Structures are given as C-alpha cells and as structure tokens.
Amino acid sequence: MTPDIAPIAWTGDSLRLIDQTLLPARLEYRDVADVDDLVDAIKRLVVRGAPALGVAGALGVVVALRQADRESWDATTRDAAIARIREARPTAVNLAAGVDRVRPLVDEGADAVLAEALAFLDEDVRGNRAIGRHGAAWLTARTGDRPLRLLTHCNAGALATAGWGTALGVVRELHARDRVETVYADETRPLLQGSRLTAWELEQMGVPYYVQPDGAAAGTILGGHVDAAIVGADRVAANGDTANKVGTLAVALACAAAGIPFLVAAPWSTVDLATPDGARIPIEQRAPAEILANGGTPVAPPGARAHNPAFDVTPARLVTALITETGVLEPARGRTPAEEAAEKRERGR
Ligand SMILES: CSC[C@@H](O)[C@@H](O)C(=O)COP(=O)(O)O
Image (spheres, rainbow, N blue to C red):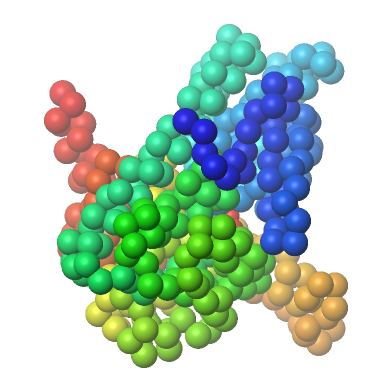
C-alpha cells in the first residue's frame, strides 16, 4: 500500500527520510546509508514519532548490514551498531520493537531483513487506516452526526508513522465523512511538532485548524470549545498508562475536568506488555538548550538549569479510549491492554 505522505522509504540503496526538522519551510528528503547518520537523524528528530521510529529501526538494520558488508565489519561491530540504533531514543517502544522484529533474520542477510522491514512498513500504514476507521466510528457513536471540534497535541500524523497517521488518521477519516468542524493543534513546546508538523498536515488535508500555545489547551477545553481530544502514544504500558509528548497529561486532566473524551490512538506495536505501568516507562530527557534558547538566542539567564523531559505519562484512568488497529479499549473503565492481549491469545488458541 502506498502512503500519500511517505516519511520513510527504501530507495534500493538507502533509507530515505523526510527531514522533519526543516518543515514547514521546506519539504526535503535525506538519504541515510550509514549507522552514524541514522543515529544522528533519530536523535535530532529528522525522523520522529513512535511508529515511524519503529520502521526506521527495522530498515536501519538493513543500513547496518549493508555498511557491515562495505566496511568488512565483524559480527561484534555489526551487533554493536544495531544496538546503537535500537537505543538512540528510549521512550517510544516501537524503535526497539522494530529492530527486534527483524533481528532474528540478520544471519540470513540484508535482503531477508529488508523484506521483513518493508512488510512492517506496510502493516503500519494498514493499521493506521484501521485506527482511523475505529476511532471515527467510536466518536460518531457517542456524538451523533454533528461536525466535531477536536484537540490534538504534538504530531501523530502521517509524518509520525509509515504513512496516514494515528490520531490525525482518525481526523482524516472524520474529515472524509464531513465530521470535522475544527482542530485545535497545540503548538507543542519546545520543538513545535504541533505548529510545524500537525498544522502542515492539516493544511494539506484541508482541515480547518487553529494553532494554540500549549498553555491555552486547558482553557479551550474547559471553555467548552472542544468535543474530544485525540493524541498518539510513544508507549502504552500493560495497565494502559500512556507516555506521549510532554504536555499530554495536562490535556488529559483538562478533559477529565470538562467531562469530555480523551482518546489515545496507537497501534499494538506501541503497546509494551513487558512494562507493567507508566512508572517503569523510561522518559527521555533532552538537551537544556532546547528550552533555554530559541533559535540560538538565550531566553533564560546564564546559569539557568533546565528540566526538559520529552514525554509525560497519562494514567490509564484518564484514557477514555485507546484506539488500536484491532478495535477500541476503554482503560478508564478498567479494560487494560494486558487483559485484551490475554483474551486475544485465548481466542487464538
Ligand atoms: C503517532 S506518533 C505518537 C507519538 O510518538 C507522538 O505523539 C510524540 O509524542 C512524538 O514525539 P517526538 O519527540 O516528536 O518523537
């Protein structure tokens, strides 16, 4: 299946990424054929968003195997390179899961790994489309036919996945059904994934939107301007606690106070059944310069210390619905991913 915005592709020789650091000013692609380059691209958010990181991890193993061939690496050097890709960012479980999915094929060679990585990419796009349909149906069943006012935080669109998007995939599906009045896109400090990327995608889709400062979200929600918030996730723990871009927790708290749904849209590749709860999710701390300076100009006194977590954890009790490619769970009502997965195993038996 060919996605319309393809943030990640394989050219035949290298990994081709949309350079998300340049958007919205420029849509440029960057070809990555070397592990150092890939790790740098992941750390600098050239490629970002949990599902996109998963596919980049899987295709990154192909990059490592080809470089190992070119540079005659031994197995130890090759495995260390693969581990560096896997650990380039800690919070989105998809990155490690993408690497782990193809790792058993490493000894069969780069072509076998490539075939599996491309299957993973295709599954992600299909899964996102299913998430869009499930999310739209869930919301429609609760809100009737009127066009909705939605709020989102960070970017969980096509750019953050292999294509189509998770939270924005639901928005796309609703828009196709004429069911979106407007989207409030939180700008998402400090790296502005909301204003730079989500607004760019909404513009491409023709969805009416406002960019608002993160600090406006609670007032917009409690002021009665929003029917539901919908966000993506970097990791969903077994009990339904959900890590997503810092500021998501405040949105969820405001939704609870206003009595409106707070939805998380994420594929099962983002669910980490090995992590029992949110307290065990590793939260990435990023460089102080991201918040102490703006475009290189200091915005805090010299010597200011920075607390710059890239993510926060929303407790399951605040997650009204978790929209996955196989259906909708309601963690706030006690339905956890662990229970759902156990039942699926039981049914498959
Ligand atoms: C479908 S993407 C879901 C999340 O990965 C997204 O909301 C997010 O928090 C991304 O953070 P980022 O630091 O831009 O990688």
